[in-house]
Image 1 (tube, each protein chain N blue to C red):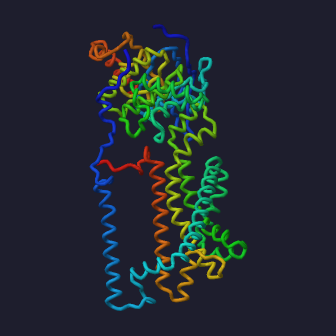
Image 2 (cartoon, rainbow over the protein chains, first blue to last red; image 1 turned 135 degrees about the vertical axis):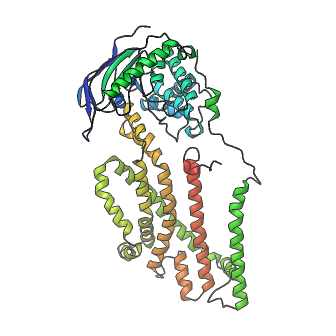
Image 3 (cartoon, rainbow over the protein chains, first blue to last red; image 1 turned 30 degrees about the vertical axis):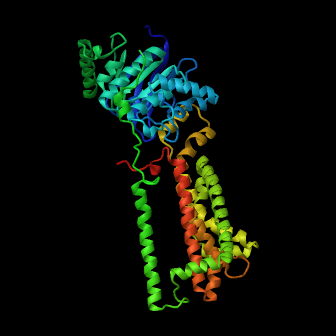
Length: 253
Length: 286
């Protein structure tokens, strides 16, 4: 499983918000095609800001962000927010259809693709359910299906499982890895959980706060598929210890 | 390996519990209907008793039975007036809903337009209709159009302000999502802002329904007994001059019933439109 040419690269990227806060300073980073990268750091380290800049939702104040060809076309980037962010007035199927409808895909084709995307996240049979009738984990699954329905090259996730209970989070972590292995998108995952980042990623970028910046860039060289065996292995524990230490150094600086 | 939903996750999903029902309604709904009905019946009985026992003459205070009798006897005249009041009320409500919605959409598209026009909508709202109505009756020849304008002025503002608020209340993450997918202005309006504004609009409509009726009645009072209009307010004025107090009460009953009916109808529309998703249309979870 090789990592290809950069799908997104940042060079000297800084972000200063209108109120004067310097959220991110001088970030250099290249994310290879097919990689699974976690941005790990304490709150206020600018990891969400970096993610939003990659999505093109906010412009950088300085530096360059380059996307691989086709990069910022509609549907080439998927985004999963911390909250499920579903339209409460639409059922699960219509929510997942939204990106396709916005891109002008015909209704019948959009329906078929959205149904397939829902089935791929384990929600076959819930097409007609409204968000309020779904559990927190199921809502997040709909949100992931919506992000994947356009077959994006890059999937950006902003602490998507932070509000879920631990059992559900473990299950969704496993399912996310299954989807990643099956669909070969590039994943960038923002989290503040050391354990989650080690379990999921091939590469962990540790960030520090005030101002937000990259302090360490580490790789997790455990093979996929990863499962409960990996979660209880000595290698996993060792990685968690290393990353925790890096995070402590980042916060102590 | 494929992705399958765990039972733990599915178990926490909200389930609609089937409640015990009596003749199609839950016991709670029956209580909600029966208790006010009982109180109303007791009050009417006490009223009738007081009128009979004290021998109060009809031209001071008629009893409920006499009012009911008048309502039936004068139904020919009263139903015609009711129809006219209803026409004005619904026409005003319709125009208010249409213009309120259209103007709110315009406000949502441009902050400059909103900032420049909203104060005038407020001025229109805070100026008492009784004070403007005589002017409108001077300027507008057709009395029905004049009544319609008065009722519209009263009914217009809640729809405008509520819908404007609703259109600007879209979830900011959803707004970001629409930007991510390069949605154009029309798509954002159609798929995001209008659905978000729906509960706000309907709440405004419910307030405006009652206000349109009040506006129509007040305007009729101002128009007076010129003899050109003959809505329910005109009947009240007329009956007052002729000391036909039971007929005044009968007209009053019709106005109240109309107001209640409008409120219930708009509540039903609101419930039907929102029942799948909005908290306001949900039953309380116990």
